[in-house]
Figure 1 (cartoon, rainbow, N blue to C red):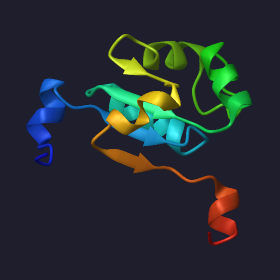
Figure 2: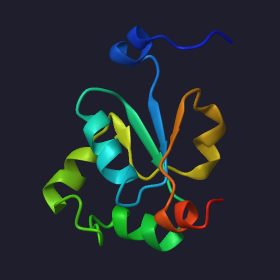
Figure 3: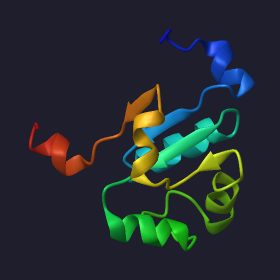
Length: 102
């Protein structure tokens, strides 16, 4: 499968996948979602549930910003079953992982 080009993302043929929707990943996904199709994943089920309910405990996004990110062109958060289908992924690791140098 050929690598996607920038034009593929601009046209909506490809979407950006953000792994980790914490205080780094969620704003990153929100910024990309202003111009591109975005899908976001997080392994923390509590975090996923709160985002689905429209609440961001990190306070990086307001309820209105979070609602805008959940527009039809984006999927935040997305079911992990669709992760394999994503050709491009951005990893936004939690600060605990960075601190532990994993």
